[in-house]
Amino acid sequence: MLNKLSTVTQKLSPNLLKIIGNTAWLFADKIVRMVIGLLVGVWVARYLGPDNFGIYNYALAFTGIFDTVANLGLDSIVVRNIVGQPSSKDEILGTSFVLKMMAQVIVVITAIAVISIIRPGDTLTHWLVGIIAGGMLFESFYVIEYWFQSQIQSKYVVLFKNVALMIASCARVILIETHATLILFAWVYSAEFALNATSLVIAYHTKKYLFSAWQFSWRCAKELLKDSWTLILSSFAIMILMRIDQLMLGQMIGDRAVGIYSVAVKISELWYFVPLAVTSSVFPSIITAKQESTQLYYERLQKVLDFLSIISYTVAILVTLFSEHLIVMLYGKSYQEAAAILTIHIWTGIFVSSGLVGSLWTTSENLMPFAFISTAIGAVVNVSLNFILIKSYGGVGSAIATLIAQCVASYLAGGFFPKTRPFFIRQTNSLILPSLLIRLGGYIKDFRKK
Image 1 (cartoon, rainbow, N blue to C red):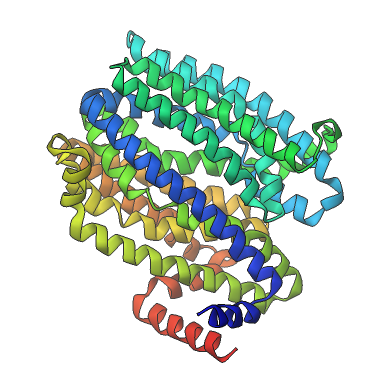
Image 2 (image 1 turned 135 degrees about the vertical axis):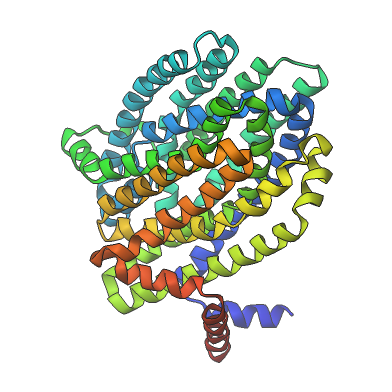
């Protein structure tokens, strides 16, 4: 068995082995987070009940939309720039840090002001949003993670951030056991941002890197914002696409509907760590392939699309078959209505996975304006369909709206623009199941021949 493993390992290039190792660490991180998040999250949902859980998730969805603006769309831009300009690493990180800190202060103040306007007199929600948004101020330190991503060294981030996760999870369990109020759960959520920031700082110092070497540059800031402004708008549109359903349910029906819907969404999105881990690991390799040859570049993109499509279809089919059992087993009969929502919402993962690969392509091709246009179209579709369908079908209608909107934003929109059709064609190849399976068989045969 060991000899076979050694033979397989020898067939792989050093770069591919590095990507596989990095992806394995990311997978391990996400699996740990998934298991702990599911166990503790289920416990929290059962303790709070659909009404309080709905208020809590309404506040999370609301602050989440503002959080995307505070991130300034810098994630992939910073990774790309460090890979392409390794000597400018300290300037890129320092400038990104300052930009994110400035944006977060503005966004936190704005979030508190907006919630006061749209929910006047709802003191509990005001406090929840204020506390959760306050934690966002620590996210400027997350630029450290971009550095480790660019070096395909995610294991250092994983190790330290999981300590923060354990501490926060233990705190939530203590709150449940002591019958704490909802406000205290918001404080723990906010504190987790600070714990993550601290863990990243420790990881950075452990690798002998110095914050004192970071530099802020107006020139670099202009370059980053020039490339990222469309991604800021795109990220905002993505959050509208993925979270407006919960906000509209809360405003149009009530917080209990949000609680029921949130349970379905949490299970539906539970496996999203897979495409996120894969795409973040292969991104440096995609950039390198583009520099080598167009053929290699598109071959790698197609393989990533195919791999994620196979996983997406498998998850969607299995969850559809067992949705009611999952909901009742995990959350109890008080959340049973979420099963019908989950049966529909789980299929959005197919387009989410494809869209994540699409974001790599638009970034490497400098087609960020298209990323905004496509997600903006999807967001408009989602809001419009939610407004129509929620009135008649509640959470089920919202799930239908989200599925259609994701399909439009992540896939169909690419077919309407000449510059994006090359990638649209490859997306289509990965989404047609029979041809996908045939190609998968070809990949396996090619690997065996090596």
